Amino acid sequence: MQQPWSTTRAILTGGALGGLLDILFAIGFAGYNGLPPERLLQVVASGALGKAAFTGGAAAAAFGLACHFALSFGWMAIFFFAARRIPALARQPLLSAVGYGLLVFFTMRLVVLPLSAFPRPVTFNAFSWGMDILSHIFLFSLPIVWATRKVHRAS
Image (cartoon, one colour):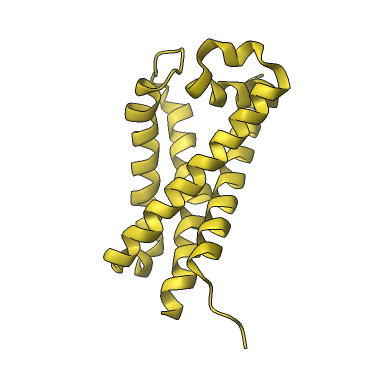
């Protein structure tokens, strides 16, 4: 008989899987646009380090990766505990992934980045934003919803 998932397992699994798929997409899309992986991860780190991230080499890139996953686990925990209060979030996986993906995307672009040390203005590019929104829905939020459902179904 299979053991039910714990809260900790769900948060670690959903956060890790969503974070991994999201960063792989970001690295691939950045590479398609001529930006190497280290530079992309420095861009992530620039939210905390500002312009210094771009002269920090591999250490700044590693810090950016750690920041990315810290945010992934945080977003996972937020969804998990919201679904405890609003069980319909776990019962409607696709709808929840769409809604949560949009919430995360716009919160990061319109609130977190402008309030961080990110050294560039947030600009709008329809194609890039569209691809990033799809990534946030299907590669980031869907694993979060799936991991949440694993616990909520068992309880």
